[in-house]
Image 1 (cartoon, rainbow, N blue to C red):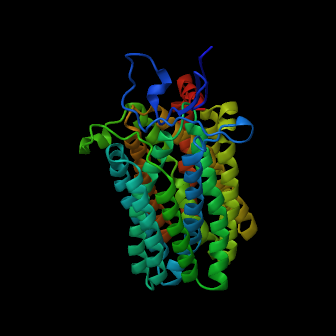
Image 2 (image 1 turned 90 degrees about the vertical axis):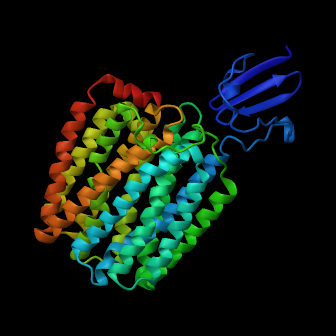
Length: 451
């Protein structure tokens, strides 16, 4: 026999007249069905013919895991840099004279700017490419930390947060679309899980390191450290991560494309947005509550590290757990658990117990991140992954903005306990809504098809 082919995942191996050929189907979709007169569209990148052999005739390619591995490394560095400053930032802003309401307002500004840019950046990357927005975003993340280090007033911190929000708005929908483009059939969910796991590992290290450095030296040194790490992430992405080749909707960006997503994507995005109140608690409520109980920067950073570790474990297990329990049950139980945890925090005055409850609260949230993102990616029309991710992330940010304002007003004019009661009511109510909405069996089949 002079010709034969084998396919495994996203790789296609061909033996053609004593010559070895290896293709990456995410880069060359034409090879997925290579028939005379058949075309799947333009080739994303030139096909690589593999003839180099190592010891024993083994073929070395470095082809399959290359882009995803580098994306995961950048994700780790991003988590390390950003989480180190988030450990310190709310408390540092308050130490400079800011009120609880101003801290919540600063976070609301962050999510407003990020949410509005998210709608635009995801759709724009569908036509312009993914690399440019991500490189710019990582450069802005690094620049924002320089601004933090030089800030000496709450107002200056507020302006610096706007810079980081711009970076985040450019980054998040585009990087998920990039992962989708570099993933083969059925690989997106696991690659998203790996990406978020790398972010979580960096977040654990950054959360602990940021608090320790702030206590031993100063918060400014923590911010300078974040600047260096994020600059390294930007350099690594620019040097080693290629374009995924998927953008190309006629080469033009149209403003109407921002909202040209399916009704299924909009519904899933709205459900995901309703659960974003957990981010408000973790990023604003938790550090302020622990500080009020007498916690140091190091203790707050350690709590963030423990919570991020729990979150990381759930993210890694999410595909398995959802496959066993079903997405409907998993998400409903997670939301219910978070609501009950808020009640526990509210009735406890122990610092250690509060830290444990916050870790449980944030840890369980890893269940829904992979699920929502991969489900939206699977329901996205061809060529609209960026727009769909923009819709998901944009709605989540706008909901977070509303939650931040409500949380800040309740904490300032009622009490922090009152704000936590509000969160508990929202989460338990949302648990019931998700249980009813996701009743059709097709939702679970949607998740299974993404594994």
